[in-house]
Image (cartoon, rainbow, N blue to C red):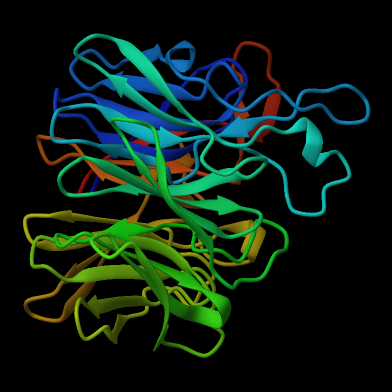
Length: 368
């Protein structure tokens, strides 16, 4: 496996937490960072990054008691439509219970659509006032965007043409830290949306009936509470990873039968899954923050029920090792791209002799 760590140098940027592959061969990413610099475009042929932050409307700027700006993010909230548009949602970057948030000052996360063909963005507004968007997915026909909010576990459905919120409700789930809501949601080929809710149960949203249901289907594994990653695969199945236990599982649409497939790491975190040539590729590992091994890639073949570890996500030449991969996507040529969250890297500056420790927004370019 070959890995190259590319630093996405956007003002204020500290993490790459959303990724999607464009129809034009470019990679689009969402950042944790400064309000005006949350979206970028990466060109694989030239290795150039373009700041698209000015093309979208984020949340309003919040400040802590000392007057420092609070960073914002696009968290697991980017999708590519069949017509090439990039759709997503924005949010703030602070934990529940923060002493620096006053709800009346916070308008809430915005839904946006960016069209690479015209280089124009469109703001579709705030679907749930005062709440941030933590995850989005889109319908197969590209007409709807679905999302979950943080802190209050709202679910919404928005018409991408009119910007109208056609459905909004809440699911039962805990509220703490970075929230107990589903960290990813996904829409299958029939227009059913999947996510997790209270104590590790599955919820579904039927687009045709506009019906939200908290089901009796429960995530596998003792201590499994919330979904970290979800994927609607070409074989019609739903595949996912679990936040607490690091288990990979499948969901059969219709019957909602949940099957445990493998456990690459005993948790916590399994936040990234993609499909390439009928195989599932994912990233597991939480790094030093969770006192577990650093990020590594695995492969799972659903046809053979076969698992193998591909290797640690390390740029050997630069000496940069991923600690906690957060998002992945597959480019048109099959290259896998990964973004990272919550990882601190130490770098040696040969010119000054200084060691710089901090969070860096690395985009990992991977050839398994």
